Length: 253
Length: 253
Image (cartoon, rainbow over all chains, first blue to last red):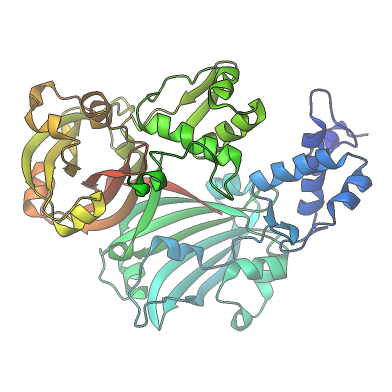
């Protein structure tokens, strides 16, 4: 029998290990039920009393475990309504880094146009970033996003297989403007959080042409690593946009 | 008798107002003792039992109030040592936005050179930002920061008077490389947190010359508002640096 399964967080032990608190063990069990899809993002957890009984713990222990998962961002409490699995990143989260001038002030959701889609081998860095074995295959997308018909963001996206297999074949015309809700619906992959590394560069002639800017125009570059509910990196994305439209607020303590 | 003093958070009432929790009222009282300088940043609070007795509350109520102030970032707990007033921003916090190439890899603290210092009237925006009456005076600083002799950041700083009066006269040769510890030591002003708005622009000929770059070179611009323990904005700062040295990581949920 393979012992390693017991150290996999997807298969928590049926009782606390030595030194582990009871509520910490319970939180790991609840986390596993969420990441395995028993409760999908947006759904409510069962009533606290029922859940405590099911796991054979006191109500206080259950509440401590839930508080831990709230603090970790996996659950949200809605006052008077219950405890819910937090929705993934759903909106146009790249727009938090840019302020594009639009006629009516409210940019809304950019229109998405997939310029390219190909299956290829992952580079060493990509395999490393996505936790894939060397020589694994990935799906690469290039897409252009526009606001009111004006191109504003150029993106290069790398997705691991077989998780995103369904996107390799599906009709591009039926794709949504937002990818993350589609990742969830079509591939069962919830983007839970992202790490964005911001920098500045200059556009190549080809990039500039797609964004209707001059070659060598300054651009802001966002290198994103996006993670699913289980903490796995499931998307690498590079986004380029006009540097003069870049604006971001950071809070420093 | 002036009633308004009772709504000033610096003078909390001597008992909870209707609808206010006892620990919320106690937290406001403790906050006032900190912002009024009774316990300066870095010092330990008295033992919990003594503090509860002094305020005439139960130990549990005191602990709830302390937990609230920890959550608000005013206090920090050090395991086994006690509860401390959090230190202000002390290090070279602007360097979190830039990665300057240095010979040994570790940038250290930039050397500071004050290029200009003048007393003048605040603009309307500055008075608004600093909570000053129209026509109030401010102290303006221009400084250049260098790493290993290489200029890297050009800063324009506006400080309210009379809080920073002492800096208007003091010998510039005796100034520290870091301003925030000096603000605290010389003026009693602790910078507790900051809001940094990041953007992009091009250097003027004069700015570029000071930074030893070409006129029109791309720059990252950080517009900072820095706040003291009481939540007042006490510094407006604009920092310019080479856009190609800009690098910042944001976490998105």
